[in-house]
Length: 208
Image 1 (cartoon, one colour):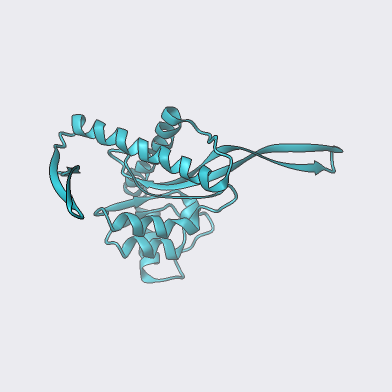
Image 2 (cartoon, rainbow, N blue to C red):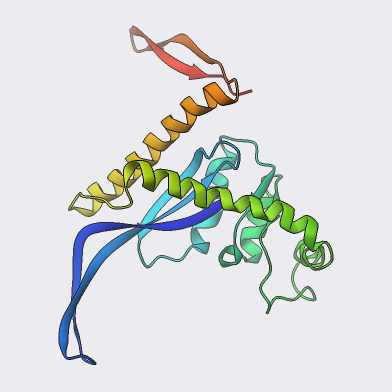
């Protein structure tokens, strides 16, 4: 499932409000775009942009990055991600897209794929929604990250702010990995790997 959410920063932007005749200010914020698993809530790919960045352009990159590491079966996202390019990006990975159509969308134009998906959405709505509503898990993922590690960053420089958000996501993945070990019976396997001339022991997880 794919979605985006904001993280506030300690930086401010100030401007003069001509309407009210006074200076105003507000926190700047970062926007985190991520894809997650709908069962474990593990974050499979993530992009951090400025707060005014749109959601849809990040979609294809998240899908491609996830497909390089995981086998995709379904991808669900809200209407903000609906586009012919995004639908094609999902199908190219062998997965089924579940992105609802807008009221202005039609099935009379576009590729055969677009038309088939449109008619499936219109005439098999209950089946479509049963798959689409798995998307709510990405909102749960954001809630998990913000509840444990906070919805704001304290770093002051732009690079440090992005890194701080990424560390939050990394720590979240460690938490859900540990949770999956106990709840889903995933057995962590430890084996030796060689780095240069020295041998080190690093964890390797066997996902079943």
